[in-house]
Length: 240
Image 1: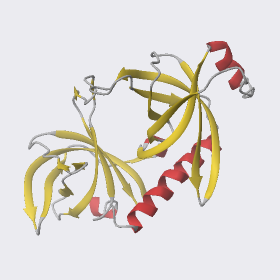
Image 2: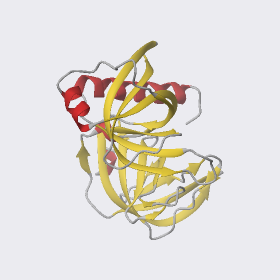
Image 3: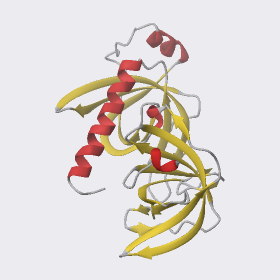
């Protein structure tokens, strides 16, 4: 049955179903990206073992994960359990069994794409955020914008590094550009900070996670178009 929806080569995102200690020292859910190696006749999946940079991630046998599959037919989600680890033809794989049904998942905006994008940012008041929602998006010339680097982005939010410390619940304006179908597209987006913390072993640098607020659906689709365009470009270069 699963073969009707999931095929070898389909990309997927694995999220642990229990909290772990993240690299920044906080507790949260760990996410890995990899792809399907094979779909077995008994419904089990062979998944290429994920990597971080050049390090192989040995997913534990018995570990359970929430998985989002990116197939030609759309996005699907399910819970899986790792039942075996193997090495076949030089490829490290894990064998997983389904522990929930497979269901269609529509929220493409939450697929996060790793990137390096220059940005400018400043904190704004709740009153300014409300003005933004009403369409007043002009940046005042006397308001300083600080440099930052977006390190992953989705249609629903982003993660960026900056030398400024923000606080949970802060509203910020993010000013950045993305190359979409060969053209530079500028974005000025309102976001709410959901986490800001010092990066371990890096002086005066903070990791910030934000969700976009009052984002127009057309703008969200532009960001998603950028993500999938970059994914295709990288695949063509043989890096995925």
